[in-house]
Image 1: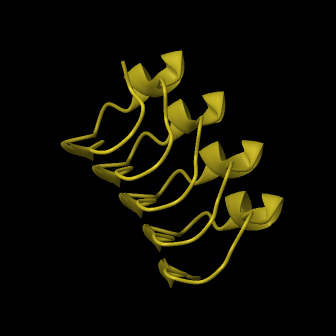
Image 2: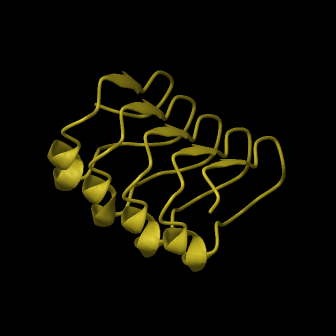
Length: 105
């Protein structure tokens, strides 16, 4: 069962919807790609503790993002986020959040 996945600095435009099936995944690195959105099933990554999405082109996060209850470290810097979803309050384990260089107001 896959626990760590590194896909940084490729030319990815999307992640497959099936990524949510990786139930044992704890660490996901997808920085430096060209992601414009995350699949709705992303919130099924219940074991995810570390997520690096910096340097992409994300303008919003799916509502399902708030179901990442084990997430402790989240890198979202250098994207195009104008706001965070309401469900973000569900990230009870979050202890490190990086949001520099977005369009937040």
